[in-house]
Length: 303
Picture 1 (tube, rainbow, N blue to C red):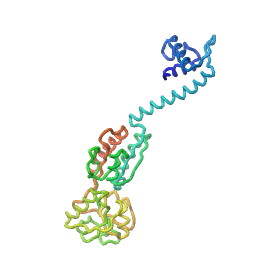
Picture 2 (tube, rainbow, N blue to C red):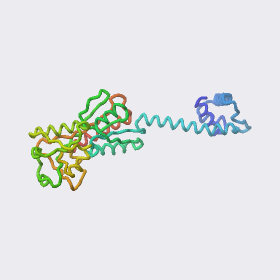
Picture 3 (cartoon, helix red, strand yellow):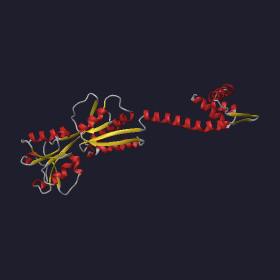
């Protein structure tokens, strides 16, 4: 049974007349009648009773009409959905966020703009660290991810820098430097205990911080490790030490800590977007386009 036979049948059933149905379909009446006869033979049932002034459905025809409408509606909906999916208008986009990247204003701006353009795409967020998200990208569990570069380059991935932000010092609110009304030199922290996250979950930021300390003339004395970047401010406030964090994380406000700009050559906290190099979906391609567009606009505001 072909779909066109069902469409022919539904049209004849709705018109209750072969000639009018043929005109509606744009085919001749004899070929239409022949197709209906073939359909009846294939099904093994009479679908129409011929009357003097038209036709009417048999019980078998009425049942076929009901089911045919459902079948054709499903086929039409499926075709529409496949076309939308091929254009990236529907589907599921799994986006990863590493190392508190979601605090950087550009990142939520990208998400908002993408959702405005593709409201029917289900965006599934995943918060993790850069190595885990890189693994997820390679294995196909994540479609795109905001990561902290650099990464161990995988042939399967593309990585594009979006933004770099300054890093700032965070000290307890009772620290002598907390009252500073000017940028603080990292050298002023030479005798402090530093609270950092494990290098394994953010090698890029970790190395940027320790390298900046070395340029300032000292090796940081490392104390307790924070499980992740967002844990640093509360732990600093609890007296575990001082730290250096991306400026955007100053949105974590507490009376127990003070954030201070760094004098001179402050370390940077870059954010890149990573995705699989081969066969990105239409939804991913649009996400990349939106990210690039928003990043360009963002950089213009910083000039």
